[in-house]
Length: 221
Length: 271
Image (cartoon, rainbow over all chains, first blue to last red; front, side, top):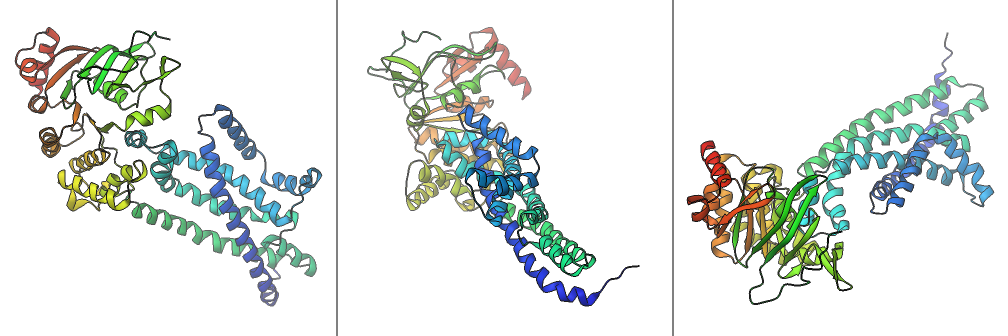
């Protein structure tokens, strides 16, 4: 049967908790990049310049259709051949940030499309510039409409951070691997990683729903 | 492209109309919505447009607000071309910069109000003056409070639109449009989406505007009694053209055209 050793669990817990911090930083930083860049991509797909829209559209499709792990490898191992030398952390943040930005741009796009035509027309009737229409009228309504989708990807990005272990970012899975190889015991470290992920993902999903409700109420929607 | 060389670059003379449609045409594919429309509206005049649905009434207002472009002809506002601009001595379709310069003269209220749901009543009114006209917040607030007072909505100024009834939202929307101090106000079926019992509160606000302000107004409406009361002139639209126009007494009391008579009797039966 199982050979589960509690004393080993207590022994490795501090290292795992430290690595959890790195995982959260990676997820948080990657998500922030994705939130900002995703909105930029969503807006860039709607400019008056057809070739800009098309180029951005193709880029988003390309990133979404190739595996994240390949993109991580590419930036970290192929980048140096083009003179782009980045640390594992920087490579990882760029890869995960850009990858999720492409998904979030679709969420934003849905949110922007959900703003009724009458809102644009009212903004035109007030003689707003295109920039003012987006900044003052459309985006403030598109973001609350996007919150559920944006929140799902927050949990998604968190669960994808273990991919950064392949280039040596000391997040949870990387640390669990190291502990396992040092001690020839994998049961406890991997189980603990699973439990930690679960313990963070579940409340996070609930938190996202709470934030969504709060923002909608605040905006009078 | 249509030849616009016969049309003037600017309207001049003793009485330049506030709004002038010259040979205006609008079509969606093969469907002609506005057919060679000529219509002048004088400064301070209140004109109602009535007619069956699909007759192009709303399109007239939407072209004036530049929400739709025109496929032929030119619209002039205050003597200057709105839909076109003069370039190399010729009238060419207006660019966004020209439109923004000309649009300051025009305000519009919509059937479905289109208030900004994330802003309170007073924030809706202050938005244009602050962002577009560059007024200070305190100036804009003062102006907005005056207008909300005028439409009887001052006690609800801090409510979001979702907390207001349709009639209340429409009154805020009127204040929002007026806050830009337009010379021309367009009302596009502003009572059509309202419950019958609140129509009066909106039409009364418009009645007061007609009586007390020197605005040029163009209304599309299905409220015949209202149109008769407030208008200097009523235009009956049919098939993208003005079938008949005249003073309210003339058009409602003694219509000359068969189609006008048919429409008016159909409308009366519905009541």
